[in-house]
Image (cartoon, rainbow, N blue to C red):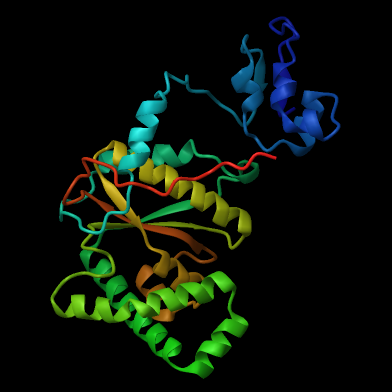
Length: 284
């Protein structure tokens, strides 16, 4: 069986059944029976057992959870986690990459699918190819948005969020072009690394990648590093399937880009947090 319970250790506290969504919400009376048919291998039953009485074939070990930061520490981390658009050329260390790997392993995923794959791009020639492809793509979007007919067709056939992204990216392309002419990097911001979060072309994978990317940004801040979302790159891969961009990335077969981040050491570090719009909570 996938799951067994040592009856000599079990104290019948039923915490495992409360932690398992199969026994709580899917009508299964037996934890063993539920695991045999529909278990998603989340390991919650193993993790909550106070007597270590549960053995799960797909959960080989568990790691102890240490003290967690208080509210003040969490808020400080959130305040300092901002988009970075100017990086030092210092490479990201292998220790930092390994830390990010562990962060993604401990992040949530829908039905414990854990389907997101990490792809790190550090090669300067590859980064240059991505940069050039994105600049060409933004130029095409600028031309698309400049004609009423093509704008109408884009609005007709594109998802609303993608259409709005096209307008936003095309409006700022003249500024990118001017920055590129000055020798600056208006696309990847001079970052030494690009991180792609890829996975199957499903809504669940897209949502999982969004959760992962935010956790990655927080972990980078904790290490003194920084990052910035590459929404235009994701748009080019997902909505436009822009071939020069896809060729420059060398994506594995069947993998879609759900999130992308540039990362590295920020040129400057924030000391204070600018004022933010106050959010109200509506109670009903």
